[in-house]
Amino acid sequence: MFKGNKFGERQSTSADAKRAVLAKFQQRPSADDPDVQARAVERKAIADARDARLAERRVEREAETARQAAEREAALAAEAVRRKEEEAQAVEATRTEALRKLEQKAARDAKYAARKARR
Image 1: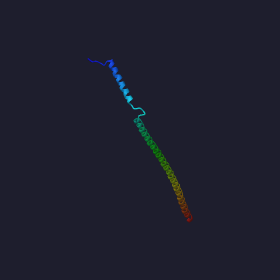
Image 2: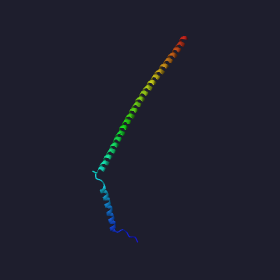
Image 3: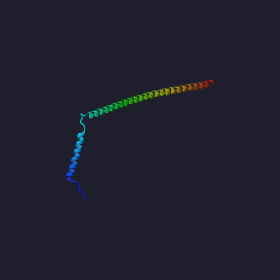
Image 4: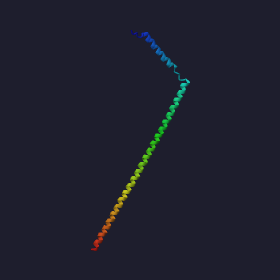
């Protein structure tokens, strides 16, 4: 036959567990303990080093962003110069073509005038 725990046993087990938790909590060193202070100093040094690395990365990212912006501006300026050169070449080609046509027309007109003069 099963004999369950009596209420008194359950109560004493609970009290023992509470005392064990309290004892564990009381064993924790206080804030003025040298080991606790040393760990706090170590944590602060680690946090400072992390902050320095983050700041360095931020500066590197900003420098990279500035470099990319400068490259984009240089590329845009080069593209503008190239377009202007192409436009100038197109204008020059148009002007050359117009002059060539005028010369051809003048030659043709001279040829026709010479033919009329012979008649």
